[in-house]
Length: 413
Image (tube, rainbow, N blue to C red; front, top):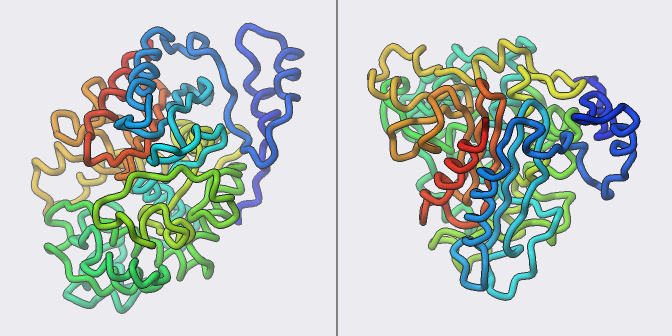
């Protein structure tokens, strides 16, 4: 475990100061008590103080408020948080705590299911092992998991798992059956290790939850602890993220925003909203967090691996995670490398493609989306970042997040 200090909100505020105010003013704000269990967070500023046009930002707020209004709202719940250069605008939350018509108003301390935004956090944890000389991305996966050679996968590199070029499927063929049986994570790991590839590793790109599950198993074998404990010990605790967890254990269920679920999960005891799935802590999609906590991760990545007084990653690691690593794969088709760039765990924006995050964001912008209706992106050129949480299935209307993203991107001046 990293033995770095755990700065409080007070320390970050005092370090950053308050725009236009004295150190006395900064200290008076820093002294204000946080709610019990709240995370340290980043300093909160007015939009104009960090180069964000408040009138343009209001367009995004108005859109989400419109979509979440009323019992039959197309988006039951939502949150927007934007920031720049290690500071944020106060988060705005909208709607209800769940998709049910009689659900109560969204809680100020609501925790959203990140779905696939979980993945880059798990990959971040694996990169810590790279920094410590315990893991090589250019090694074959079989060096760490010998039984991975099954189904002709002996040539697959760890790098292929990080870049969605391993050929492993997204969901396991028996995914629904495993959930129905309330299987432990171990069963999903075994299935991912034994899975047959869709193509030879490094020759194509296909988004893969199974690949992330295999990376989580590598982390578990090298660290000797569960992936949930590893993420807490090596990432969340050093960053002071008290409202984030890989799985919901330790948090009251009342804080968890209930998500709309895919048809195959409706009415089951294994849906995203079931106690079983919430507590499982799937490395492919089981992270719960708040906008304020995820903002710290954004500031970390935009700060070359450092936020406040805590350095978690080296600048070299951040550069590799946030640049197009598909360029390193000689057998990958050129159009794929050029138009669908991926870093290490983080995706880069895909301008001109249907899965682009927005019409105002370049290919240098990195981030991720989640099927439960979430999106996060970071722009190293402007030092700006955008966090969009909803609980509406992204596949039903992916354009909603893009509209919000466009409005946010237009607000950076």
